Image (cartoon, rainbow, N blue to C red):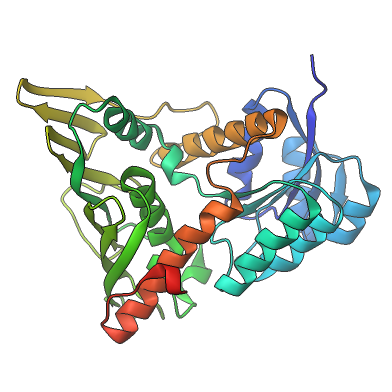
Length: 343
């Protein structure tokens, strides 16, 4: 058997605990070191997961060596300096989303890893949720023919600010934090985007950024999709954190509806399937959908690292998703259709 891949996790905050749980479940991977500037948090997480190597400085972590990859789970402002540091040590690197605050920063990170000859993956996990994978499988089997219209929808009244209060403080909110996932799902299902039109609104007066966004995407394949996101929507049954999907094709339709129900309708009839994600031993409802996708993307990373394959959500690929985020903000500000390739 191959020796285990030894990883380090930089950042021990809100979401990183999910990554540590998932790494425990990925065969042949071991997280051997942690890094965080908050000493108390570093101690808490290190004790919880039994990880003895602990650092408050990333340079000291990298200088000590003994690593096969680094997983960066910090906030966006720190991504570029950390990725470039890891690349200088010629180590494969995973970076949390949003990948970068600007396209220039994102391109610089992709270039740094390419120049160092090391893989770079963005932790863009929504496409790895089992319900989304089930939609993709129907498309791949050709059951509904060629898709010509779609919708990727995430509408909720869930209080995300209770666990992540910093989300209320930025001038950008829902597109950068949540819409980036939905836009990536739209790319995954319908292909790359040639034009985007967006409208945004702030409904919650206690936050700075937008909490509602509606985006119309023109795909290079000829399909049109709508991506809509809201954290200001009160529903009879709270669907958080489910992504709902609709697809119309030349031979039928797909509907991924609340409660993880997948309905495929063709000329021969309709079938409904339960595509609910498994509840992992360390997961908790309603987060289990996202938590399961963390395990899936990290398993994908380890498989790609061993096989020498480029991950699906590589830094190079994620440039296209990040460009859609920038295009959405540019379109909302200008009220114009934006070609993401111009950004």
